[in-house]
Length: 291
Ligand SMILES: NC(=O)c1ccc[n+]([C@@H]2O[C@H](COP(=O)([O-])OP(=O)(O)OC[C@H]3O[C@@H](n4cnc5c(N)ncnc54)[C@H](OP(=O)(O)O)[C@@H]3O)[C@@H](O)[C@H]2O)c1
Image (cartoon, rainbow, N blue to C red):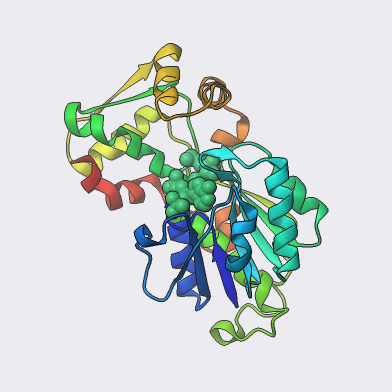
């Protein structure tokens, strides 16, 4: 079994790669710059650009599972690109795809729903690693700034990676005759992830001020939270290179978050069989980034 991981050099993709390797899966990793990939030994690194589906043909050769990002160059992929990617995957013999939601219901999800491929959509509402956006100001001034003070049920990137790996392995092993890990996943679990949409959260919803408190405990310093005005927040998001539509989406989300943003889901535990990782655990792992 070979799985192609797109976004493999990113925060989530690196975790997907790690959890697949732990399960004995052969991993092929897609990147636009193989020379800068820094992926673990044993991973086959291949070049390709998600905004140019034809460039993925060699990467898909011989692959039965794909972990697919739904954005390219920071923007959701277009209907045309999504249609071509899914058609190419089908022609290449792919059987199951885990889809990393980009924040909006997108073209990839629609193309997959019309295809003959098995798919599982992963909807991580907010990554714990977004806290790294605060690293510079916390180190320099002990202050973290964000728009709004609403709670969010942030998810650990490693949990996203583990859910993707479990969904891919369990969906692919049965049809391929099994055998991984002594055939532990064979049979009974095959098909349980097909056509499913998992909203992925951590085990609790925390306000930004509570997150800053958790980071302060992990680092052993006094940190405080300061709420941005809407105009300040727009400027911050714009500076990341986001389109005006992207700025509206992010700012609107923080001002008026949908229920999925703060509602704790049991999906991580349901899929992996163990509780979702806490923000305190994430903060302990990353304390060095905030010192
Ligand atoms: N942050 C959140 O709270 C949140 C919540 C829900 C969903 N998301 C979604 O999660 C995804 C980001 O995941 P992440 O944080 O793990 O990524 P990341 O750390 O920002 O890294 C971006 C990854 O995307 C790859 N990439 C970008 N454009 C590409 C292209 N044209 N062709 C091929 N690869 C391309 C990069 O690969 P190379 O540079 O190596 O080519 C890199 O691996 C986005 O789609 C985002 O919308 C984020």
